[in-house]
Length: 512
Ligand SMILES: Nc1ncnc2c1ncn2[C@@H]1O[C@H](COP(=O)(O)OP(=O)(O)OP(=O)(O)O)[C@@H](O)[C@H]1O
Ligand SMILES: [Mg+2]
Image (cartoon, rainbow, N blue to C red; front, side):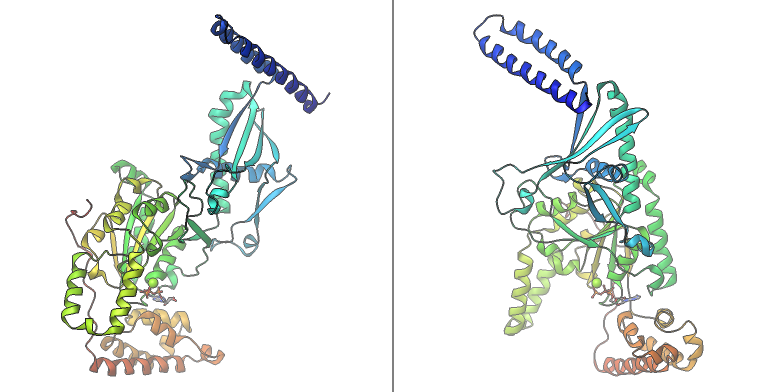
């Protein structure tokens, strides 16, 4: 007799016993000795069950903690089973893996990661103990909200079965081993991701599966392709490296392992590009927070809870996303109306539309401050919070004080060093030496006019294959553009330099 049919016969016997017990129990309702019989019968039934079915099981559900957060254990087990299951299982689930890593070899990019499909079972051994994993899913309860896709999703889980005699080994040693191995597999197959939060109606049903959507993160920018002052660049890279290695330090001082960066400067100076370079340098995922799509502080917290460790949380153009400009904003508005701007119907309409867009988000400054360093900010670790802005002077000082924004980096207009860097990147390594006269002219002009790196790069981009060989026309285009900008600058007032906020220290009185 094989094991399966033996078990099915045993199950029948146990089933019959269970029915008998129910009948006896119902008939004992009115008998005085009910409690005595119940206790002793239960004890014997448990012993009998242990003899006929000495197997225990542990279930790992995909969502835990009241279904707020996807379970790390579930993900780790899923990854562990990719190695254990592929040989023995007939039905597999396939996902792309490894392709999001910039260092991934071309063959890695085609790689797929397999895991067990629902209904499959696989055996595993650990120090002589045999265990069985199965993948299953149950339909959602019938009373879920009909329009919410998340709530209609199946509840997936893994079940582990093992002999009672291996209880301690499995619970205390095998499962921690599985989680460690799973994490290692996840790190190996990790496909870096760029997440975005999209507005979802009706997701507030206790099941927050879809608050983030993602695509593979494949931005090609790295620090060695970013034009900025070499000393400043080195400082940023050192700071990032230090942060990555500082787990013990953060533990020792009792601070959540995270760091805030403020990138500020005119449009086109490389702030967003710097975020991509940071993510590539650290190997982190990027969460792009679109605050205008976040309705309330509570929704912002839900988004935070669903972010994973080793990630960069970016708030682009923070001054436009939210009313974080504090009292200064209303003062400006007052001044604006005094200037008579209110008479311009086009400007008034545009302003109204902007206000409408902002008012769809009820995220407040204090909500954002709490997000950065409130009690919830400590869930997860190894994360950067990055704000970018074109108008650093408009931000509420509480938002950017040290401790919230630990490092403030100004991205500025192109200087001659940055020009040489961009010229070598876009054209040839020897371009500066080969076109000395034109480059000297560029140097002189850059001292007189401001041009952002994106524009310098655009003029230096070759427009025909010949221009790769001879950089003259590209440099000439740049010189012409700079001369034109100089003429215009002579007529228009010079743009104001960004204020220095690097050492700003502000009282923390707006976090209440
Ligand atoms: N310092 C730089 N080094 C190399 N490339 C740059 C630099 N600055 C800008 N660029 C190029 O210019 C383009 C625009 O840059 P980016 O989007 O990073 O600017 P930004 O500062 O974020 O602008 P905005 O304030 O409008 O968001 C990118 O394609 C980038 O490659
Ligand atoms: Mg940008």
